[in-house]
Image (cartoon, rainbow, N blue to C red; front, side, top):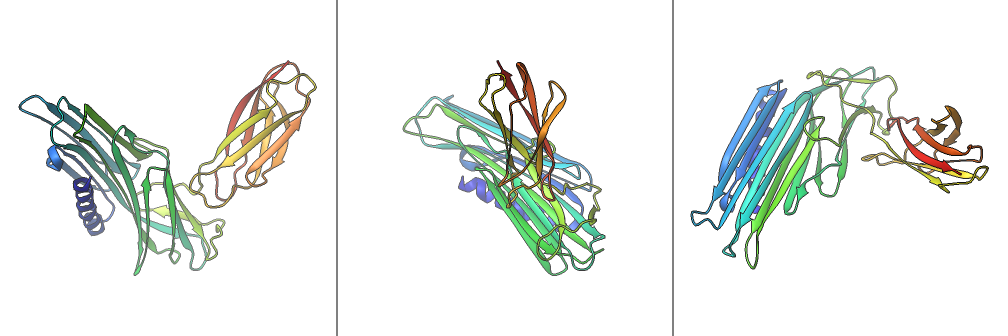
Length: 342
């Protein structure tokens, strides 16, 4: 892993200097390291403001036929999204000295953000997190970094997975003045196979904003010095990409008891979560019986939980829908649960 970390570090230095020098630069790097960290292929690509996509494949084998390995990595970067992915595998038939096979993938994109209709001295709030991570049966790590630069002021957000993690930064930006944002994804995975027994191993990474991969967050919001959202303020980007301003939300909906008897009181409990957000979601939840089209009622969130009880459900199977209204930090969402009434 030491060789891979060193490779990822040099890739990071290369892309930092590249994007800061040219601006609006989409840049990618896909690399595969073979026997004991030796680089088998290294494919960088950069395009000013357009799609940059790199794919790299490599393999090695022992002349005596005792072990072999293969890997592929890819990186995607443009104003539409960022992503890295790859897999590495080693097959071994002996118990000889340890061998290492690994992959490194880096994707980054440089953008300029301008705050509009925010009054005097607003702040840019940037939140980032990774809800998807590496898979396989060996070691894998994914790093993510966001750099914000305005004049002589800068801020940095760095996350590492596993487990899923998030971070946020604030940067003071006068209205109408551009701030540079650089998003960097670095993924690395390796398989180390050696004594006393090793038949092989595999690891993979798959992470991205929009494509490829998914499940991540990146929000850009305009706030005041106290961290409160400024209503009516918007963010324009040189790339044209529309960065979301709300955290995604999810609902865990439970019914108790289920099944129930006709006329029995049933409690529906909706728990709202919003990955990456430091505070508890607020707002209300509307409960509907999708089977009949009737609205069962509304309930305000208390500590992120809304509960509604009813005894009016007729005999049969009902699809109960919970609709979360969202608030100033989290987007709306909905989910359903099937309720059986005997």
